[in-house]
Structure formats: structure tokens, C-alpha cells
Amino acid sequence: MANRILSSLISSRSALAPVVGALFLLSASHAFAATPFTVTPGALAIGTDLTYPPYDYMDGSTPAGFDPAFMAKLASHMQLQPRYADTRFANLIVGVDASRFDVIASALYVTPQRARQIDFVPYLKTGGSLLALSGSGFAPKTPEDLCGKRVSSIKGASWVPKLNDVSVRVCVPAGRGAIDVREFDTSPEATQAVLSHAVDVQFEDAAVAKTAVDKLNGRVAITSVAPIYPVVLGLGVKKGNGPLLSALNSALSAMRQSGEYAALLKQYNVAEPSSADIAQALGH
Image (cartoon, rainbow, N blue to C red; front, side, top):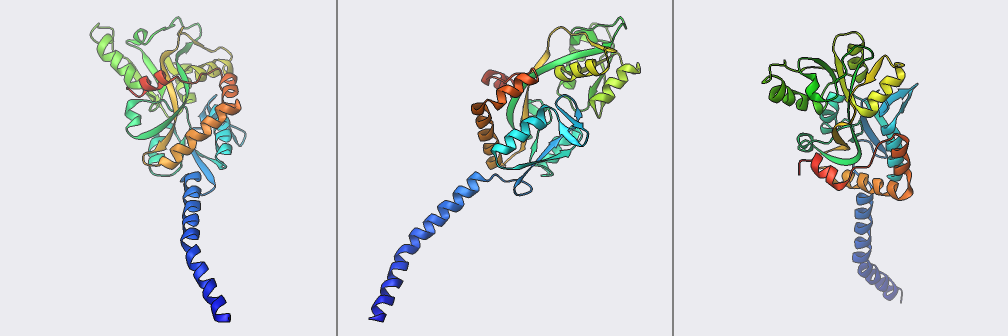
């Protein structure tokens, strides 16, 4: 009798083994799909240049601005803890490619050249402005007004090649002098160059330029009248990290549905890029 019971139990367990195994594999697969690859389990390491208000800066010892506010909500939907790696702008793509952090969130413009290096999650649309000393008599409106002038910019900005192109195509053939673009590690350093007369004008993101005008009590002024080179901003992810890219896109969709995304865009006076904006930014 005991032998028959034992035999029955063994038979039952053998029959259940494939089912249990399948359930285990399904559970493990679901857990992997739901948990994106990150440098540190349970955390989202974010590379950002915290010298770029109003997008990225330090409020005392706390990262602040659009990107930290946006990433805090995004990480919450991903059930991850955000951690920031303050990194100068020119080193951000190198840093994410070397897995020093998981994602770039630092007012990074989407360009075809960058899209060959990293994957993007587009999340914002803005444009550029020109900043000059108030009362200096120089009030450029367009890039073509910069011929023969010294222009400061944050290092690695997407508009630098465009200004160089205007210089080669427009300025030099007309005998008006080349545009002398001088790049600085941070936006405040580029602004200081204007204040110290080391350059004639600064090319800067529109929201950042407005912040500089407010902080300096009008010592500099925005002289352009419309956004120059409208651009799409994107989060940057290392090529090949599909699980993280998918998780970020899902979290952004959740922010849209909750209304958090629209509220944040309104707070900073920026816009969500359209599909056409994104396609154009990627050069499609």
C-alpha cells in the first residue's frame, strides 16, 4: 500500500514538473521584461550637466530644473530610484556609451549625427536665442547677422556646426568675415564671455537665455525675435539597451495619461514634439 502511494506521488510530481518549469520560465521572462537593464539594480543613473538652468542645475545640494523634475516622475513610473551623475555636456554621450550611467537627461538636442551614436526618447521641443549686452548697439536677429562677430556657446552644442555652415556659405563669400564661434564648458561661462566683452554675442537655448536675462537683471538682452533652429530634445540611451529604451517609452506614456507630462511642459513654457518634428530632427 505504502509503495503504491509513493509511486503515485512520484508520478504526479513527474507530470507536474514540465508545468512548473514552464511557469517558472514565464515568470522569469516577465520579470526580465519588466525590469530594464540599469548600471545599478533598482536605480536609474542619470547623466546631466547641472550647470544649465532652467533645465538642469543645483538648488543647494539638490538637482533641480526641468530634467530632474521630469526624470523623478519618469523613474517613479519605472519603480526605480533616480541618481544623478553631474557630467559636463561634451562628455555625456561618451559617458552613457561607457555605461557610466543609464540615460542622458540634459537638454540634449536630437540630431542625425547623435542618433548614430545613441538611441533617443524625444520629449521636448525648443529653439535658440541670441544674447547680447544691453545698450551695446549690437542687436543681431538671425545667424546671418553674426558674420565677422565672436560668438560664445556651450561646448558640443548642435548649433555650432550650423553657425559654421552659415559662416562658410554666407559670410566669407560676401566678404563679411567668418563667424568666430568660441565654445565653453558651461553656459554661465559663455554668458560671462559676453559680460566681459570677450565675445560679441552668445547663442543659447531660448529657455536658458530667458533665465540668464532674468538673473542678470537685464544686463544682457535677447535680441533675436523668433526661435532659431527649432529643435527636439531627447533622452539618450546606449545603443543596444532595448529593455531600458522600451521601459522609458512606457513610463513616458504613463506620464501622458496621468497629466504629469502636460503640467510640466506648461510650467516651463516648452512643448511636446510632434511626429513630424521628431522625423525632421532625425533627418528622415
